[in-house]
Image (tube, rainbow, N blue to C red; front, side):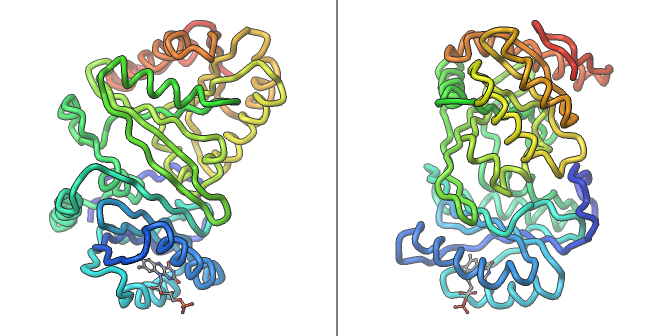
Length: 344
Ligand SMILES: Cc1cc2nc3c(=O)[nH]c(=O)nc-3n(C[C@H](O)[C@H](O)[C@H](O)COP(=O)(O)O)c2cc1C
C-alpha cells in the first residue's frame, strides 16, 4: 500500500502504534455538543489507561474519529464504538502502524459547515476509492480532506489538491491574528471558515482560516487562538505548516510567553516550521529571539505595526513568497530574505 504522505515529521515517541481513522454517519438526538461531551467522558475513562489517544470531529451529520494506540487496546475500544447506536455505516479511511501523531488523549472539533451530509459522504467515498487504488493518506491529510477541503478554484494548479501552502498565525495579545485572516478574506473576496476545538480539559478554542490565490498557487492562512497551541490536534498539524507567523506586541513578557507556547507545541516535531516574528520595533525581538535561538527554532525577524493587518501582511508576504518560489523551483531556500529577517 502506498502512503501518499509518508513523512510524519514528528519525532517518533519510538513506540510504534496502530493508527486508524474512520468516518460514520451520526444518529444523535441531543445537542451535538452534549453528545460529544458524553463521548469525551467515556474516552477519557477507557482510552487513557489503555494508551489510546483520539481526536473526534462532528461535521455535517458525520463523525470522523482518529485513534492511535497499542493494537489490541485499539481493537477492543473500536469493537465497543462500532456497536454504539449514536452512529452507523462506519467506514475505515486510514489504517497503519507508525509513530504517534497525536500528543494527548483527547481532542474534539465541531465544524458548522454550510453543506449537506451528502457532500461529506462524497468526500468519504473519494477517500475509500483512493484506498481501493492503493493510495492511503496520512491521518492529518485525511482529516483535512474531510473537514477542510480545499475549494479554491486555483487549487487545480496543485497536482494533489491537498498540496497547497499552509501558514499558521498567532498573536501575543488580543485578536490580531484573527483580524489578519478576516482582512485577507476581504482583500481576496474569499470566505472565512470558522471551527471550534476542545481538548481534554480546555474547551472551546476558535480557529479561522481563509484560502486565496498567491504566487501561482493557493495559500491557506489559519489564525489560531493562543490556548489552541496546546491541543493535540493542533500539534499534529504543525508539521504541515511552512511558517508560524507570530504577531508580537512589544511587551517582553507576552511575546516570550507566545514563543514558549509555540516551542512547547513543536516539542515533538523533528523540523518545526520557521517562525516569522513581526514586532512593532526591532528591539522588541531581543528576548523572543534569544528564547527561540536557545530552543533551536528558526526565527525570522520583521517589523510592522502588528495591530494593523495590511502592515503586518506587507512584511510577512515577501518571506512566504521567497519560500514558495524556492520550494516550487527546488532551489535552496535563503531564510534570511524578507525585510529585517534573520536566521536564528
Ligand atoms: C463517534 C463515537 C466515538 C466514540 N469514541 C469512544 C472512544 O474513543 N472511547 C470510548 O471509550 N468510547 C467511545 N465512544 C462511546 C462508546 O461507544 C461507548 O458508549 C462507551 O465507551 C461506553 O462507556 P461506559 O461503558 O463507561 O458507559 C464513542 C461513541 C461514538 C458514537
